[in-house]
Image 1 (cartoon, rainbow, N blue to C red):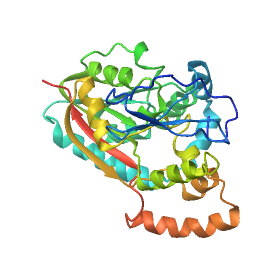
Image 2: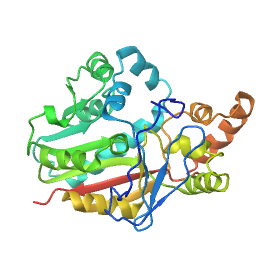
Image 3: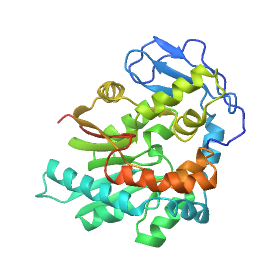
Length: 306
């Protein structure tokens, strides 16, 4: 599902609790007049999450994507940006681990398998999963990588892997604690977790203020940034609290400007007209390449205690 989905959101909890730090000091923002979505803001750790997320049935339906649908989505991404960040991450992971032995890497939500292919080329033994059938088919077709179809509950890999990675997966699940617990379980003692997840940035603060000032009428930014595809946007503090509660030792939490979707597609999802979209794309692409744009993601490195 995306920001144009018209299905009714699920009911809102009467007494919400922050999914990161468990605080009950929550500001509930006005519902979007367009989508009905409501954003909860934790006043303690700064996380923002979808107060009325999709049901499990709707979420599973939205992720049941076939081969052609998944292939079409990959065509909308900035391949050079993705490969550059993948390569840098693999180099850093290798430096954090004992490279004297064969290293096993498990990529959760591995998509079409491009990261696992690069990991194999870098000397890792690759493994991974995805809940979308089309992703599993593409990984085999494009890279000859066999992935598990399903979530971590179908995988018996306890204590098996030196590294576990997640590229923009944590924000896609309704139970992030369960996902992190599963990642911790399949890591070896001393193993390393890397995850990238969307970050609450200055752009989001601007969008939230516009929404508040208009009582939920001007919501193009918030509807795009917090929706069924991104149910939580973290701050550095909220990410730290969530990982520590899960049992990880924090190594680094780093804000980055990384836009994997093409600018034109992103602006289209915001409802920007085509003529203006073309002009804005060129300017934004320049800012992104020079690292002058909003730092929209967090790169996170953590360890399982030895």
